[in-house]
Image (cartoon, rainbow, N blue to C red; front, side):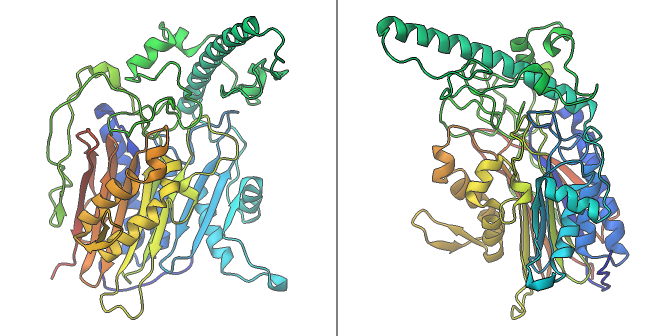
Length: 515
């Protein structure tokens, strides 16, 4: 890899493995992934490596972990394939990105190669691309010598089992939708026998204009090969319980009439999401589902005992009223990293397998600059030499609507919050972060008007001549993250937990060179 700067300044790496719900039983393994990513990246930074190299390495470690929804073990599309998104942005704001790319072992490395290729001129004055999607991205990865695997090589056993469970749920929803639609048709025909009957799909028998999701037949839902062959009986049957009971065990109380096909959220009722209202069977992101088991308790967010670590907002270590009800993680979302090297250069990146059972070709925020990842470069005329990077995680479509990464980076850069009259006022960086989530994300007209709830987690880093300052905030149940500076002996990791009731948990730390 090129670009190996040297210098005497402090360096640091900050990572997260997604906003959602992490079960207390699996908390340590998620934090271990974060810590391992920090250690690998810091090994590069301490040896004079660039922030860009460190970000790539940190995300490589997280992509190779089956626990994360990035690279190997990612969520599967509706037809049983892995399609990933990734972006990497350097200290000048230049980016490389790949969307809906299949068969590539490490999408973040493809994004890095695209970034490097975008700086090389093409013949005949053509502009080199910095964003490739689908088969074109896979072909480019192969041409550049990256590891391209068979279609089923990125599918883990756990992701395959999740996919089969989703198909069981979708088939049940389709059958119920068919019976309800047929009853409505029969009623209309009884009242008006001469009304023209609606057009019906010859494959599924569902009216063409019906909002009910259409599923392919069983053969089409299974990818080629034994790995994705449908089970001989339903997952619910193998577990000795019905699908509804299985959902209750997972603490999911979805509206039975809701459409759980798109982003994993029943979209039959509009209300603002609370961080504890999550159904991540499909998306791995927060969705609005009523939780009939209230949780109480509070604690102070602990970001570690090292100097410079601090917490700015109370968070919750929540006792479960039904421990068995939430014994598995409801978090399979975007991973992200931000690094600052010893020359003071900043870089950021994101990677994700996207929402579960998604449409083929869906591109999420992890591939979109300004939405999932953003860097504000240093102004040469700025005496403070300020630069900011931001990465996001959560409900992708709402993050896209609000341009969350760019908006949060700008608020932290200028230390401003937007008032309800549209004007800006000077505040601290953590106040700016909280106001952005509260007003410009949760209060955004597009999010408020959506029938599906929105959740977000933001990790932002501000670098000045005084040091490196890390801020995070989230309205989801939990947010797993870690950091490490060149002054630290080991990474500091935290599972930030929210108290619920539409609150925002925050925290961060300062990394300053020892005198």
